[in-house]
Length: 292
Ligand SMILES: Nc1nc2c(c(=O)[nH]1)N[C@@H](CN(C=O)c1ccc(C(=O)N[C@@H](CCC(=O)O)C(=O)O)cc1)CN2
Image (cartoon, rainbow, N blue to C red; front, side, top):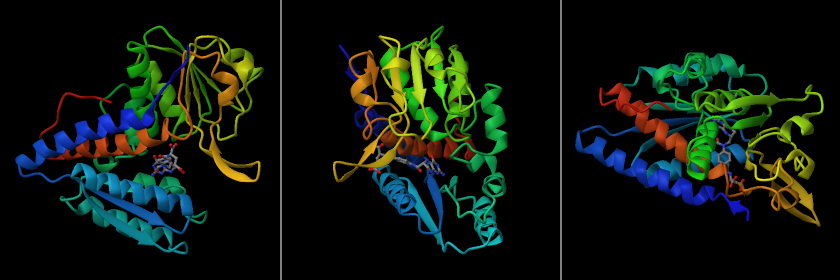
């Protein structure tokens, strides 16, 4: 029988853990604070930022919002980031992506102090992740790992296939699976016969951004499937969200699968709160032994 991996329930557990950690920090006089920088008027980004601020409030994290117009210059964004880097009362900084096209994303992300980089996108954190150092880890892949550990326990020796090689998901996901002792293959647009490779996987992580691209022929019976895709499509005259995996085709084959929505998505924001607490601990000398 196939299990549905419930990201909403798992994210609620993560948020409850974070709230307890925040309470412990506050008892020592430390109030974790997260600054969110939003540039432009992408409607989805506005929803995500609103949800980040809401979740922060729910777990007791102080949040600060900086909204800049779509025509803001890179220098204006960098000035905001520099101010937040210099503010000792701010422990986490995130710049919501995507940025407007005229702003060099890498330049902005590299300007964030790596110890406050709660998205884990700075090259210092990216490099640390691939070296297995305890750094701040990108939230979506960290959320996928939590779902995988809760589903399978030890991942050691499993063959994991990551479909997609983005900097935000595919590459850090591969690094985390490798750190968990999986054998990892990363498939991308130039891969030859990708479905044949994918059909050998015990674990499939789909992060390509193409609605229902991964069908039944890609899935080994009994595999665990984590669908990172969030694609809005029109179907039967209605707008709806679907993943990168053809859920209905995969369901009878898999041992467990994340739905879209309600799978990986809610984990992203929960792990952001988790990272903010880690960052606050590290900056105030309360660091735990926890890595990613
Ligand atoms: N600075 C960042 N920018 C972006 C990130 C990121 O991690 N850091 N990730 C995405 C957007 N994102 C968070 O920012 C995000 C995406 C999706 C969800 C989510 O909960 N999805 C729900 C469905 C929501 C809906 O109805 O639209 C789900 O899948 O159940 C949360 C956060 C790009 N930018």
